[in-house]
Image 1: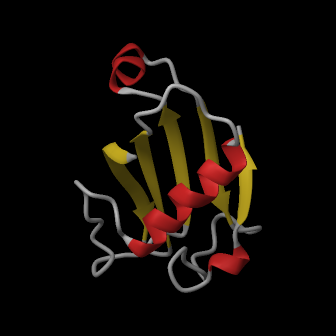
Image 2 (image 1 turned 120 degrees about the vertical axis):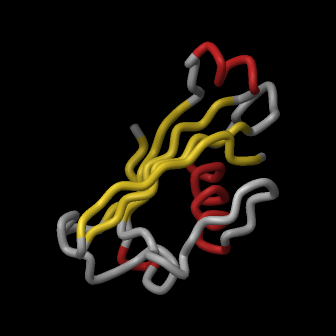
Length: 108
């Protein structure tokens, strides 16, 4: 599992990280468990090929598109998507690193 692309957008009090992840697998048996593992890797900043700049700003929201393999990513054939958001999505009170309990998983 690794990040194939990432981008961020935001304002002074809200920053959203958008990530595309390639699993390098043929089948995804449990999307929710996979989403939780990806969220943990984003929080820990522990992907192999990407380091997020959390010293500049820590995300207040996370959106992820998941692909089973590189070929699917190149053709835009995603396995699933999900996001982690706060109740109040505009307020930047909480971030994914320091306050993960304040976020809710939304499978798309």
